[in-house]
Length: 158
Image (tube, rainbow, N blue to C red; front, side, top):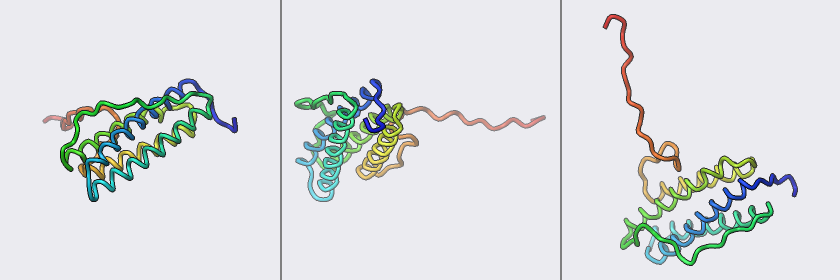
């Protein structure tokens, strides 16, 4: 298989990433129809990127002897955007979900898949920032945690 590491767990991780990409393609199809101008350009580019990742994941699964999962007829979205701000917020949410979906693949046995996942996470985190330019999470895709309380070191005699 040309040096391809075949691992059943890796195939399942690929399938999970593929399912997320199917959902992203669906979401961006809806967003593209509800946006205009620069936002539509951004959603169109994201749509194309997710279609490309979807196709790459299908190939990666097939080349490892697995069977890719097909897309669902539709996907539930948290809301249907009624304006540009909501559309941008939903796009950022989709990208954050993609980042989280690739997190598991980043722990694959196959180093090629780990690299693929890391690059896909970097792309989705960058796209999320393009839609909602706010300070990014320290580790996009990781569950949030509260910062540790800070304490000042105690002084002797004080």
